[in-house]
Figure 1 (tube, rainbow, N blue to C red):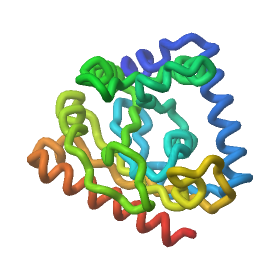
Figure 2: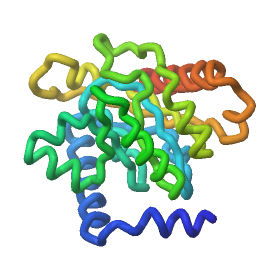
Figure 3: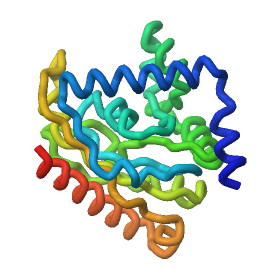
Figure 4: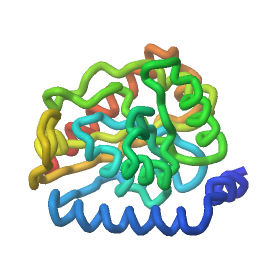
Length: 219
């Protein structure tokens, strides 16, 4: 099964796979130079199979930051409104971002997210729903629970510290700032199956906060 999932995940054209690898390398170099990025717990990303990566959300840098931490390809969600801008649309189309319609039901985006999880890929979401206004972690929304249960995938918690200071909401440009990222131990499929949605949300929130605290101690 794992071999079949890996094969499915590699069905993208070679130029998209090569382009993603090149962008990741460029992002890693830029991150080291501008933000002195350090990552702990990288081994907690599953080597094969699907997984729902859930991170706190401090800035617009977060999708790139989490993606450069993982040696596997990461799938991203993007607001449908972002596709209106030609250059940005070219980039997010190239990265196979999943469009989410926040004004409508968003059902199409959720179905595509579930498809990618089931074919053995990693998908990044921010369960807070939006960027933090002050750098602190907000209450998690329970929508991810359905993806975990229907996709039968582990949940990988991630905590970012320093990204808010590097590029807070309302700021036009980023500024140099140390950023630390911690990847926590996954919540397994069996663990999630034994909990209610409320318990799953509470446990994920606890793990993300723990990862965030560990990232802050690295600074």
